[in-house]
Amino acid sequence: MKLQAIPRLSLGYLPTPIEKMERLSAELGISLSVKRDDFTGFGGGGNKVRKLEYLMADAVAQGVKVLITTGGHQSNHARMTAAAARKYGMKPILVLRGNRPDLYQGNLLLDHLFGAEIDFLDPDAYFTEINPRMEHHAAEAEARGEKAYIIPLGGASALGAMGYVNAVKELSEQYAAAGTPAPRYLVAPVGSGGTLAGIHIGCSLYWPDTEVVGIAVTGSAVPFSERIAVMANAGAELLDIDRRWTAEDIRIENDYIGRGYSIPSDEGNAAIKLAGNREGMLLDPVYTGKAFAGIMGCVEKGSIEKGSSVLFIHCGGSPALFPYAGLLTSDLTG
Ligand SMILES: Cc1ncc(COP(=O)(O)O)c(C=O)c1O
Image 1 (cartoon, rainbow, N blue to C red):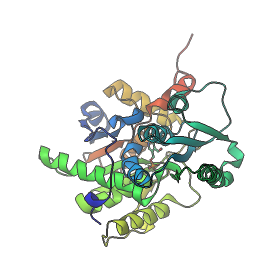
Image 2 (image 1 turned 90 degrees about the vertical axis):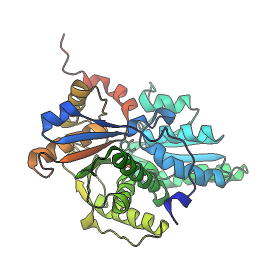
Image 3 (image 1 turned 180 degrees about the horizontal axis):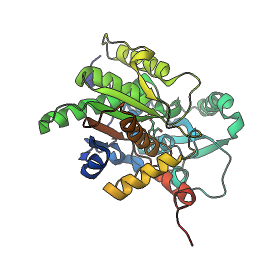
Image 4 (image 1 turned 60 degrees about the horizontal axis):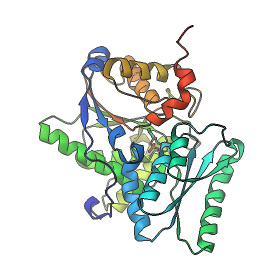
C-alpha cells in the first residue's frame, strides 16, 4: 500500500519548520539545521503527534471508546495520547511507571488536565505487569460494552512508524522547495525506536544518501539496532516495498544514556544550556538534551565529520523540563 493510501487523521500543525542554527553551527563546526517537531502543536506537541495521526485513524475506524497506553511518569507519548483520545471522544487510560506523587508536575499535570485515568505501577513491577495491566483495563472496558484499543509503549509499531515516513517525505519536499541538497546526517533520539524505524524507511524512499544516526536515551534488553530493523521491516511490508534492514544497517550511539532512562546526565544538561544560550531553543533532560550531547560527542570523535550537514529532529519534550528544575538550577549559588 502506498503511504498516501494508509488512513491518517490530521492532528499536527504540519509541515513543521526547519531552522538553521547559525550560532551552534559555528561553534560545533558543522552545518546544523533542526526540524522543529517540538512545534507539531497538538496536545503540547512533539514527535508522537505524527505517530498518533496513523494510530488514531485506526482507532476511530474501529469505533474505539477507551484508549489505553503506557510510559514513564514524564511520558510525552502518554500525554499526547491522552489529548488525542479526548479529541476523538474517547476516554484515555494511562498505565504509568512510578508511584503516585504528591505533586503532579510536567507531563503528569497535563495528563490530569486531559482527564486521563492514571494507573500508577510500582517501578519494580512495571516491566512484568505492564501488558497484563493494560489488558486488564481493556477487558474491563469491553465488559462494559466499550471498544478498547491499546497503543504500545512509545507508539512503537509499524503503523505508528508511518508518522516518520511521512516526516521524511515532508522534509524532502521542504529541502527540494528551498533548493537545498539532502543532509549528510539525520539525527534523532531513540526511546522506543518507532521514530527511527520510520526515519529509516523514509530515508530509503526519499533521501537514500543520508545517513541516519540514532542516539539512545535508554538501555534496551534487545539491542535497539535489532528492534528497529524488525520494526522497519514490518513498516516496509505495510508499504509493499522490497527494502529490508538488518541490525548492521541501523546506527545507534549508546554512549549518551548516562545512568539510565529519565536520569539526567551532565552532558545532556550542558547541551540544554548550550542550545538555550546560543539559539533560544529548549531541549529536555530525558530525550533531546542527551541526543544533542550525542551530536556534540560524535563531532568531537569525528564520527560526524566537521563541515558536514546535520539535520537534528527535535522531538519535543519541554514539559519534562519543569519537574527537573532543581537539578537544572544546581549551578545557582546563594
Ligand atoms: C521528546 C521525545 N523525544 C524522543 C522520543 C523517542 O521516540 P521513540 O520512542 O519513537 O524512539 C520520545 C518518546 O517518547 C519523546 O517524547
